[in-house]
Image (cartoon, rainbow, N blue to C red; front, side, top):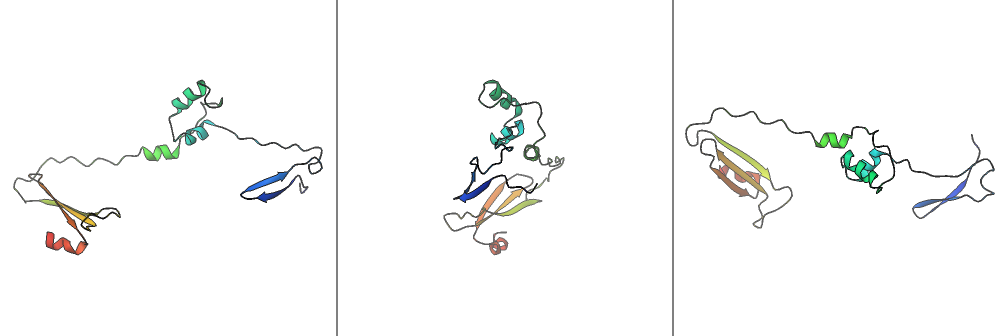
Length: 145
């Protein structure tokens, strides 16, 4: 420990190692390698399933890696989470306008041709009649309602 193995310098965005024989002592050897794994290929290929990685290995498109030793991918697990379904409705209202559902939302930083940034929807629970209004600002909501 504490002995100098090699000298290097920065050239642009890369570090260049000067490995001339006089720089490296006689007992040291220089090598670099990349450890490839099935998880690395899974990430490189956009989280493709492991059976497809195995096919690519058998076709000799990717290096001969052990496709049996893979770990659960956190990204794939999170992507497969689904929202719980809404509870089913057993009863509906029996008259028009007895219950009206409304939703006020924005266009996610997009503006309509008329300069509208928001929309409000009204849905009658009985008839399912739906009306959509475009708004420039939230303070127009009361007038529309």
